[in-house]
Image: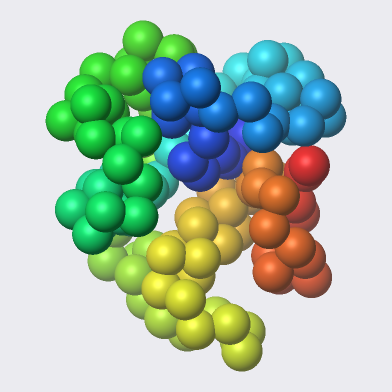
Length: 126
């Protein structure tokens, strides 16, 4: 089964992030495919540029390579995804989270996230 994973999958090892739960780590390790949204790269770069994630600065330019090295696959970023994210019947307005939820829904895969904001919108593993 494929799993959908935002930020920690590609950043965790490089930036010393040990925040993955045992359940999340097991889901990633047993997944046939780990998908990462291209919007995740944008969000990470934005946080680095704004000084909100300085630990990632040495790695930000290497994110596509890190994704490949860790066995991840970039999810599609298509007009259909953009429409789905915009049209979600969800009061949560954060555009990054809306893209993550729409990607999980369109791919019929669970989202691995500690963020409870996704509960009720997608199947969340943590």
